[in-house]
Structure formats: C-alpha cells, structure tokens
Image (cartoon, rainbow, N blue to C red; front, top):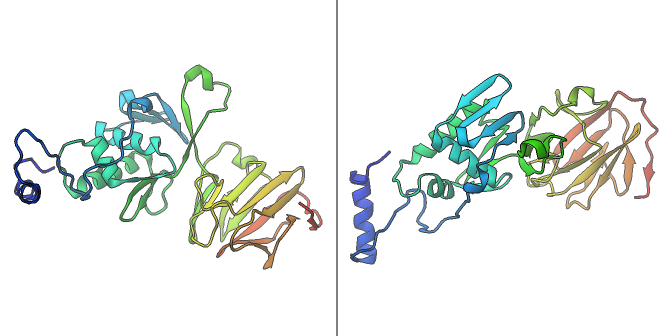
Amino acid sequence: MRSRSSPGSATRSRRWEAKVGRQPNIQVHLRVYSNEMVSEIIDLDSAHEAFDLDDWTVEPQCNRISNGEISVHLEPKAMKVLLCLADRAGEVVTRQALVDNVWATEFISDSTLTHTVADLRRALADDARAPRFIETIPKRGYRLVVEMVADSLPNAAADGRRRVRVPLAVIVGERVRVSNREGSILSDHFLFLGDQEIPLTDRTIFFGRGEEADIQILIPEVSRCHARIEIESVAVMIEDLGSKNGTLVNNEPIDRRLVLASGDAISIGPTTLIFRSLVNDPTRTQQDS
C-alpha cells in the first residue's frame, strides 16, 4: 500500500494541481484505477446479515465463512469485497467501484485488490481458471457468478438469512463448472460435455448467456435466454425460446417442443451437449408448443 507521501502519490497530486489549480480548503481524493472521480456507491450496511453462498455460510459481522466443520476467518477488507460482489450478484462490479467502496480514500497499489480477491478465492476453495464463485472480467472487474434469491426453504423465516442460488452449471468453451446442488445424485437425466456430467435436477431448466439461466453458456453466439428443457414425468422436452442462432437436436433445427431420447446431441451455439437418461427412452416426436 502506498502512503500519501510516496513519490507516486506526490506526482499524481502535482499533475492534478496543474490541471485544476490550487484551491484552499478543498480536499481532493485520487483513485489509481481510473480517471473517473465518481464511482458507484454500494450500500454495505444492508448486507451485514448472514447469508448462504452455495455450501458456505457468510457471517459479515464476524468476518467469517463456514462450511460444515470448516471455518475461515477473513480479513475485514476481504469480507467487504465479498459483500460488494454479493450485493451485485451476477453483475460485473468494476475495480474502481470495489476500491472506492472498500478502501475509500486510501491510496493503494494496483495489486492490492488483486491480492485480496486471491485471498477470497483461497478461502472459498475457488479456482480463477474455472470459477465457482468469483469470475474475473478482464479490464473491468469481478463478478459473483451466482444469483441472490429469496430462500424458499422452511427455515428461511427462522434464521432470516438470504441464500445465493448457484446455477446448475456454467460452461465456458470446453470447460464446465457444475454446482453441488442437493439431490444431484438422485437425478435420472443428465447432459454431458465430453466426459463432464451435468445432472438435471430441476423440472424446468433454462439455457442462455444471461445470469438468470440455470445452465449458463458464456459464449457470444448464445442468446441471453436461449432454450428450455422441461421434465414431464418420464418425458424430457426441449424448446427453443426464439434465440438468434437457434437450437439444434442431432444437427436439425427445432421449431417446436421436442421429446428428447437418450443419446440425442443438443447444439446451443457452438456448444454440443449429449443428453442421457436412466429412464426408458420415449419415442421422439415433435409436438405443437
């Protein structure tokens, strides 16, 4: 961390003074990540209650995260970064906004935020190359790759905690990050990308590039809300949702709901997923939507 009297700080101050002139009784705070003097204000006070981040419980007032018997103490700045990301879960939070909200008027080196995010990833057992929680958005900032939703579990009102819903899977190129949702081992239906397995644990599953998708495919050719799978008794139906580039099953574009058979190849943009089912395969037919 640079002190206010460091050579770098003095140089920046002289440049600022040369630009706007010396004015008495006016204090100017400079930022190191951007030329913008105004950044987004994130309300951290509303995020002080405990919440769930997939299988982790986050307790801001204690600067602690826990997962079963594992308990990790976070540095206060690291917890504030996590709160900023959680407050905008699913959205990109710029480096500038994180610096402004966490470090306020302190002058910090460019690597300080990077090191703090790396500490958070280590605490969460996250991987920057295949992020489960914190995704780096090059030249912009970071994104918590989960969505804040109301907790529908029976004990939601009792403990007052918010929960963070993790998508079933996030696909980037040939890599898949699959969440550890409860009930995944009981699923009868699966998608495969190569040898990577995605259990279909929900009755309705949306595919797309947007944060609201259950299976996020982060590729430009994929629409924000691209396609939908619905599990109806033993039948599994797929439907294109008016996507720009369409949805293909076995290399054929679909324009109606289609009953999937085990072994079918589903192409969404350049990504091809193989559907597998433990249930007896129904005869595949196209039906009017």
